[in-house]
Image (cartoon, rainbow, N blue to C red; front, top):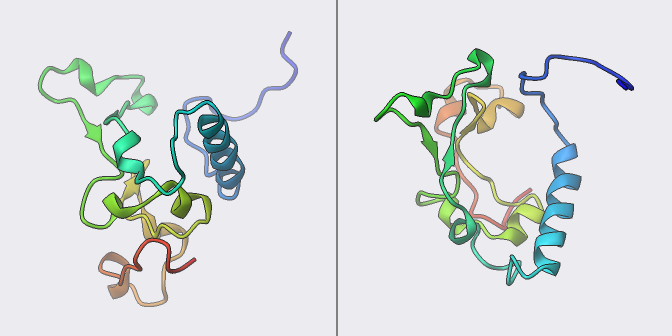
Length: 127
């Protein structure tokens, strides 16, 4: 039985604030089950590389030998400092791109010149 049907199943939707509920629930369960030892641990040590799949074309790019696209969202000078606590409090100032959109896309400043090279806040210091 189909109860309801809406939208395109392979399209990425913007979830905005739903992320907060999803993240806190998932981290809470992982913590209770001992999968996360301490909320002050850095996230990077828990994350395996993520293979990016191109759902829009219904084509897995990893099938092309030597051309797998892998994402490591908590690597780098800034993101490697981010803890679970920073994510839970929305204070990570994570930088990067997801689903082809840069991190500043949901909150661009008035000056386009600032979009790419904006100042970063240390994780845990700003909302």
